[in-house]
Image (cartoon, rainbow, N blue to C red; front, side, top):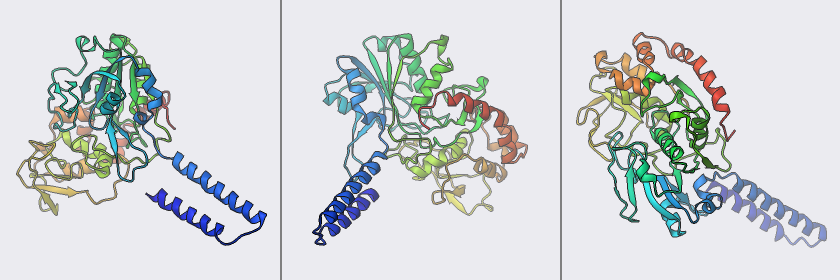
Amino acid sequence: MCFKVFKNTVLLLVLVVLSCGSKTKNDMSSNNEILKQVQNDTTIQEDKKIIVGANRTEEYLPLLKGKRIGVVANQTSVIFKEGEENISYTHLIDSLLSLKINIKKVFAPEHGFRGTADAGELVKDGKDTNTGLAIYSLHGKHKKPTDALLKDIDIMVFDIQDVGVRFYTYISTLHYVMEACAEQNIPLIILDRPNPNGNYIDGPILEKEHSSFLGMHPIPLVHGMTLGEYAKMINGESWLANGVTCDITIIEIENYTHDSSYSLPLRPSPNLPNDQSIILYPSLGLFEGTDINAGRGTEFQFQRYGSPFLDKNHYQFSYTPIANFGAKYPKHQNEICYGVDLSKVKAERHFTLKYIMDAYNHATDKSKVFNTHNFTAHAGTEKLQKQIEAGLSETEIKASWQDGLNAYKKTRSKYLIYN
């Protein structure tokens, strides 16, 4: 919108110049030069627009023609329409079908194909009512596509919007899809999308003994990679079972760097409704491993935190979680929770422990805060809980991660696609 105003303003100035009655050849030449410069400026501005992999159909449609296709997708798997003032898009599945691509079946990650299931909720197989396609869950009985499901697939396509946090399970789904494809010699096309938290790397490195679907690889809590880059790392670090390697083709994002600011046009999952929640998610996501509510059961998911056992004399803010979209059974449902509202603060694009340390320090019963196994699964280490309980400062805790982070950054650099 801002660009359109800019462009129209400049063109108006050009028209004014042209209409001032200039008669000489030099004046006309000057006007032509100005118009040419405006056109060049317009091209430069348009070139800066981020174009996601799914929109670059000319790069991947030739690879799909005449093949039997499987697609890993959810509600974020869309192709954006050009020239629209408001967000407008078509779902990848609908677009491919309209182009006569032979989609045999769809595989859905956590939250399901339409993105409506609760976090952690098992998703059942089914059929898409819009297209009649069979939908197979990768967050139910199976987290990895079975050999039987892949027997009639020639190529797989993976297109899901990630948010760059280790315990956000789409990267685990990517791992299992790559593994299954590698074992069946099926090529995988990854339609890459920006990482809204891709400008930094932070948090403890996952320890192997604490690996789970919430974290499968020795990476920090905030990994700083797109899914395309991450897939290269999975292959390059031999993380797939038995050292197999997946044949991947990455359809890259245009005009994107890791410093790009990218506002997600669609919820990547039910409880990440806006930019504020996505930026705060790396920090507030640690509450998922505690008995403290992080806004589930409200309209401000991951923009607040609270619990009945946080000190109501210390906190001025309170709220009551209720069952709603994306949270059928939120923590402390129908109970008053005392805590902090972050919905209107200026969220910084970095990871901090100050929120979870604040909650622990002001719990009236500290024994209720940590569900040790679940918190360890989210943190990727037992050390973090112990450090918080011991009263270490955030600076001291973060210092203990630096060797691991430095080693990870060197590894990560080998797989980067974008600056």
